[in-house]
Length: 142
Length: 142
Length: 142
Length: 142
Image 1 (cartoon, each protein chain N blue to C red):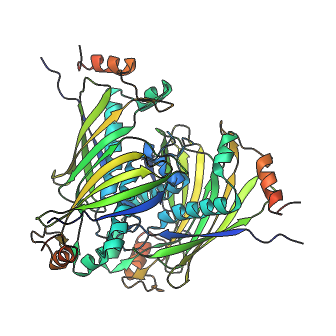
Image 2: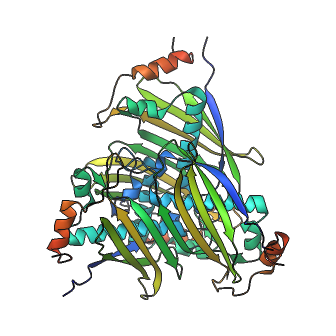
């Protein structure tokens, strides 16, 4: 029996300052929208980055990729859907779908991978205990 | 006989505002460094985005991916090496290597794909003539 | 008889990417919070920048100032209160108060002035008719 | 006899991502140009923010104001002139002039005030010794 995929959605408003001379959101600004997605995921599932920090750990993004299919314009709203993808390694992986709110059109897909480092920047190869407990709580590992 | 790879390098200074609470460059800011890389490439090889715009075309980024291996800190300098990867399709593709200036360590690799759209946003499926001429000039196509 | 001051409030969540190595919101990011404030004001009072654009006009910010009294940290929320300050000249002026949501503490005050330019960048010295009508509608001018 | 004003200049290239749908640099991005100005000032006069950090102090910006007279466009270059304005209080004050490189036109004036705080965020009311020495070295105080 496999666990359901954990997934959260959040609405994002396009800021004027996020658009470029083409009148569309500059592609680099989507990185912030993923951040909003992770934030919403964390709130929904009790996965708090501050908890991680308080253990002296950070979770830097080490990989990200984007496919931009359709643009998003000033004064439009987007929906970011963030889905947790489990890994046996000490990693946090998400995939993202960004939709235009007005018509549910899929605009962008993306994924990110985070690892754990301690405050001197050394990679942590074992899944931190608090993260393991979180996985158990949500039925991701048994 | 194949053409040499066209490649340009540019130095980038880390701004304080580009660093995050970990004291390292926030991963989303690397998107700007790629932009600096493309700009330097354009200057070296006479590939000017303004020319494209004056033909009523835009060249939005439709794909990008990053691998972050090592962090970059405030007050450090990076070298962005941008390499043009040819495609028979109507696309502009680059790969990037970002090095720490002080010790030439490879920090990040990335790639981007741009397509051509006209000012009403329609995808242009044929390589624009000016881009084709540019390819011929540099021996990329014959 | 003078009109009440028109004022709107909006909640802003601090993004991780908006904080700096001190762990607080980098001062330059407050410019975006003011933008959120103006956006909320526009929604509440039917003052839409897109309307202005459709008349071939832009409303660039020509003056801004900030007083930062207390910092805002990652994972905190702020309330931006945006108040319209009328001017007989062809200007849009706002003052802003930014509060910490959790305790209503006043963190930052700011003000901005916008003027009107046409699409060739020439300053418009007369208040645009649509803006004048908006002022009448809300009892700012008679 | 009064000291000459200490002043440094630095060139800034406009990034595509810094421009808005008007095709001009979005006003909030000038905050980064001031940062480049302070950085250049620090390099020229041996005023290093990292030194300050290593004493457990931070120098947050507590006031800033801008006057935007003329816009700056994509692919243009600007010159930022940063001038130190001394204060008997425990403050760092600068004024800035931003010029268009191609014709030396004055585009923007600005000023910032920084104070000193320790790492628990408490305001330091006495000028830190290292800053006082820096002032003496450059003939600002005797």
